[in-house]
Length: 428
Image (cartoon, rainbow, N blue to C red; front, side):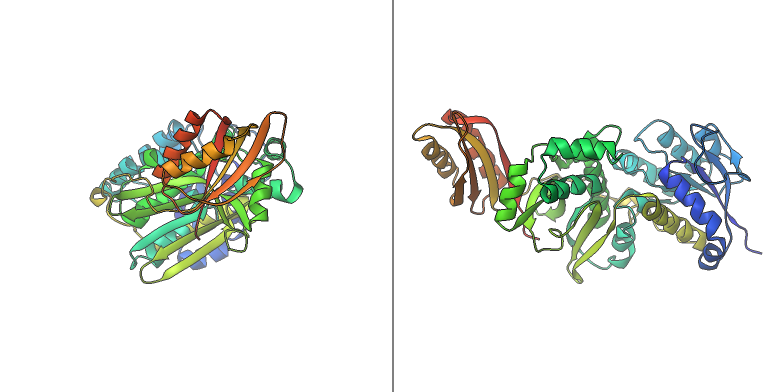
């Protein structure tokens, strides 16, 4: 008789509870699809007596996740605690050393330590699966490692943080300023304990780095992801973008060039009628482009109990079926070190700034752009405040290097108040 697949689950928050529910409620379905019974043997969490709304009777309890990872009666260690280091990393390393396969939703741990963990797992003949770490219920990791394995990936692009997408779409729909919607998101529990992980683009940057490693056969290189959050986006930016037929999204883009690997996570203007532009609320979308397949789009819930637990279970079932795919789709020891590169692909840019309200101010800005080799496509001067003249400029296509040169030139003009906002207009 085939032996059951025995799980040890570390972390009983939203996702952990979701996994327990699926295993309890869909035992027959899981057994049919896995070819063997899927059984939870033991669990671990910080508070043993907390009411989680799901029965935990019949499971052994370990206060220490490392002890859970080392138990002889588990086959798969399911790490759902989070955190790049500390208990999550310690327990994952202990599980590998004890001969366990690992399923995790921990994007931060893999973005920072994925290479060493993958090498350790493969040396021990174990696997690490992490579908739930990227874009919630969207099976994008499986798409890259399996479905598109015959393609040379030319670009990975997407909206990968539901909280940021909620904030930006809520600002547009309700006409509310960033600060008010941020407070609303915090009250609803949408933000991480450290909100900069969300609004600063860090969470989404972790995900982009993992996808880039799979797509291009490179070691995970989160340290060279260009990060810019949404904190500077104003309701005026949202409205002006809408007037021009665009929406603002926190967009991740990774692509390999002759100069090296470009990885950027930053606000971009995208056409309002494009699939990315129509993305509302907490929904995620990842767009993959390959030389053979062309462009495909994967869209769905990027977080939440059900979608993320669904992704965890997909990895568990694959392990139960005997699938032994390497962590990043290629042997970890063969993954290349990246040569980081900044995007050289020209694009139009949206610029917003406040100028000193005096004659010749706008001419100085136009001159600074011209000296950097940048031409103006259109320009709009909005309301005048006391002593200040807000201006919006859309450039023709230019490189980011040229734009940075122009922004430095703005400082020398002496007519710019505060820091200009510069947002790339992305072709999607």
